[in-house]
Amino acid sequence: MRIPVIAGNWKMNKTISEALDLVNDLKSRLTNVDDVTIIVCPTFLCIKSVADALGNSNIHVGAQNMFWETSGAYTAEVSGEMLLEAGAEYVIIGHSERRQYFGETNETVNKKVKKALALGLKPIVCVGEMLEDREAGNTEKVVDDHLTNGLAGVSADEMKNVIVAYEPVWAIGTGKTATPEQAQEVHAFIRNRIAELWNEETAEAVVIQYGGSMKPGNVKELLAQKDIDGGLIGGAALKADSFEELAKFNK
Ligand code: PEP
Image (cartoon, rainbow, N blue to C red; front, top):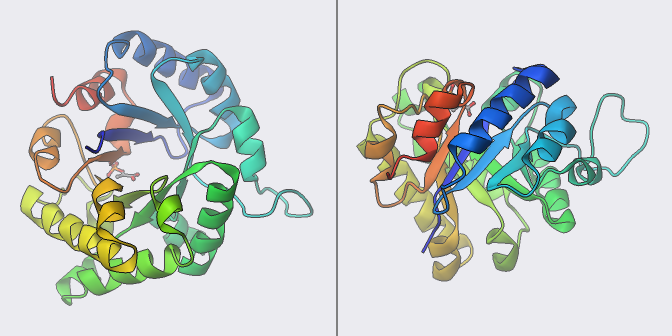
């Protein structure tokens, strides 16, 4: 049985005080949710304060990126060791905005994923096609490339700590959501590929989130699909009332 995972990707939003206001509000709204894993991913700068404020509540903390080296002359980078000590348990890796604007590739994704797993940080690995890929009929090819190369060399055992987020790039921040059927089709493809690349047991265990304009109005329908196990949410994660509704999608 896969436990649904609802994660908020705050992107470059919220100062420390704004982040604290939001998590303190969420903490009281979500105290009774025990059947969903809830994660918030603030900026690096807010991770420690947010993790301290959440303490050992049912809301977990993730980062939005990391570097694969431990320390050294890598100006402006942040290591997994630093994230762990600050209180992060999860880390988003390979978000399409990182690929589009900051030169992230399958190769860098793979290095980051391996380092995160070695440290015990759980990676949320993003895969997904651009609009032109979908229109050219290349959705599965692109998703397969992200999955196979981004996760190359990861063992079946390690895969149980990996979350895959299917995020069609054309649906991120655009208000356009993939229909539940469109999303389910790709999620089923991803689960089948995980079975082929690792094994059936691993494929059954891995959580596959959908991301792309998920909101209170469409969460139920999306999560009712057999292979959609949660959401990675941008815009609707920035307000306590909408994130509460998303985390309580099954109430
Ligand atoms: C995201 O940032 O991963 C995302 C899905 O954003 P939004 O929900 O705003 O489309």
